[in-house]
Length: 230
Image 1: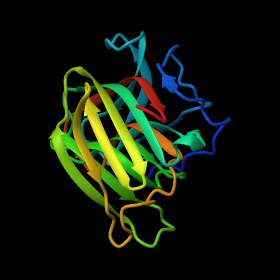
Image 2: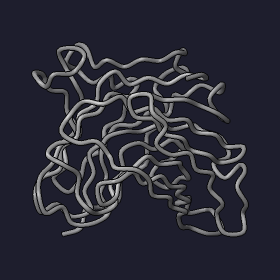
Image 3: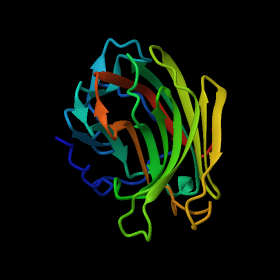
């Protein structure tokens, strides 16, 4: 059975986050004043220990075998106004044993009311990076995506994932362990390539898959950060 669509992200639970923001997932309790968890299709998102991260606990996004259109992720609507047009992010990531061949989402940075929102995505497809602009706002005059594929995604080891998102024009850049993997500017249908998001308000990470998952896999995250500069 297909997983239900993710519920809309609740309103922010506090003031905008102070920059630079860093989340090390210590101690072992998700900060629900900042993060909203989303799970479906058997996916789970939790804090676990003993995975060799940069502290005692890391975030685990798990999808079981035979999951259909499943997701396990967290997001926050407390991005400050200073990141509305341009932002940098970083996370230490471990994918095991590997990702599915289907389109798999890792991070999204976009407008409010996810998943009915517009966002720039760091994802993977057939073992390689997939960067995309997604327009999913149901109030928008058109829905769809613009996709770019890149270099292989590391698996089976911890790596430092960095990204830069810009709304003027709508550009996404990704680094792995300091090496630039991709830099893409997205043009969507007749709407051009600028102000497609109309301000970054929501950030999420974990895993979301738009198809069947033959084999179980996990994506671990640690030391998540974002700021107005790299």
